[in-house]
Amino acid sequence: MSFRQRSPHGGGTSSSPQPPPRWSQGRKRGADGKRRKQNGTDLSVFDENEHRPSDSRLDSFTTPEGPGPLSRCSDWGTAVEEDEMRTSVNKEIARYRRKLLINEFSRERKSSSGSSDSKESTVTVELETDEVVLMRRQKQINYGKNTIAYDRYIKEVPRCHRIPGVHPRTPNKFKKYSRRSWDQQIKLWKVALHSWDPPTEEGCDLQEISPVDLGEMETESIGSNSTESQTSSQDNDDTYSGTPTKVRHVDYQAEGEFDLEACLSEPLKDFNTVS
Amino acid sequence: MLGPLWLTPIAKDPSSVDLEKVANIIVDQSLQDCVFSKEAGRICYTIIQAESKQVGQSVFRRSLLNRLQQEYKDREELRSRSLQAWICYVTFICNIFDYLRVNNMPMMALVNPVYDCLFRLAQPDSLRKEEEVDCLVLQLHRIGEQLERMNSQRMDELFSLLRDGFLLQEGLSSLSQLLLLEIIEFRAADWKMTDAAQKYYYSEVTD
Image (cartoon, rainbow over all chains, first blue to last red; front, side):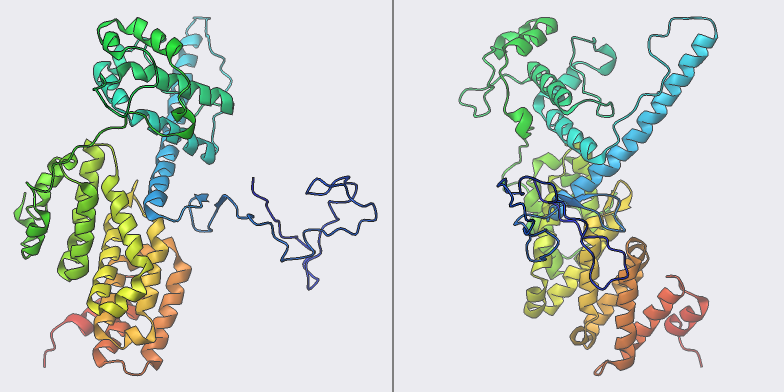
């Protein structure tokens, strides 16, 4: 919890900004929880500029020319990745809104042609637009998608063949959900994806926490697999900390075959020779 | 795909190489070879695209940027160690800024660092070195317009320095003066080459 220190907005005419009426008036306890003396001589935070709490830095800040809040990270790799996520999310929400609009439009057309059973209300649904929330949700989704299990899943079951209720479906980050509800959806989704984990090898460090026998699951039908994994899997700490399990394992050959340095020591040939 | 021969196997199968190592090698090479550093942006772009499309990750980009940042932090030391390497570095980072986009936008994270480098080149001790002036104006030609769009205030400040440098700096060679005057006019013409400027600066003198 960071302590946000506001700069007092004074009338503008005085040389030193006027502090607002003491928040401590009428307060029984001070910020440290101890009871106040009633004579009101305790300091207001606005009186002493040096009196800053140790960690008053904001978690995020905006720059005037920037596109939005920047998180307080100092390495370029992360900054660019966040940038990318933010712009992608913005594009996605525009696309999602368009889709909703088109769906609504086509539904209205159908109902106007005579059919009276429209299950969904035609009231416009409120979408989640808070960037901070969307970025956090996107990160959680990315952790789930950046797994071997997810790779195998989408290869095995194309979207058109998915059976709702049976095949895991990525939670929709644009819908309004409470934090708990969302985190729970993510957890269940990731647990369901574990059905597609590759068979584990002996001595592999990335052992599943779940006691379910993966070897058997491969041969059984998909329906029973997902229910099994949902009921028998334990709470993965990973879900909340965000560490991916079974991350894509990127192999690379040892330096032997490809000597980049040797290539670079040769003079740079004409760039357009390779097509 | 355009590029040196060794780029092809990397781009074809990014997961077959240690991309972090490749990033470091490319940066090392850029610091030694100015010709290479001018083209490195395009090479990096190719690798980043390939990794993104085939593996869905950005290990190369991340390693590249973090290494770039490391060098940026120690740039003053780099400059005292080797003027040539410093010039190569500036060329490289500007090239990267030019080529690498994030969803069609320039990389925000690089804007201020690039400006910082250019401001450094506009300092009196750098203005006295022709190679640094040359580097400065070259980068401004290539990315000045973009940079200004991202932050016009800093560009104003930079050109304030350049004007002062042109007028007041001692020890400026005639060539450096010419270069500075040309870039000042170039920006004044909205980053475009006017016919008059073309004639004056770039045409052969005919008697």
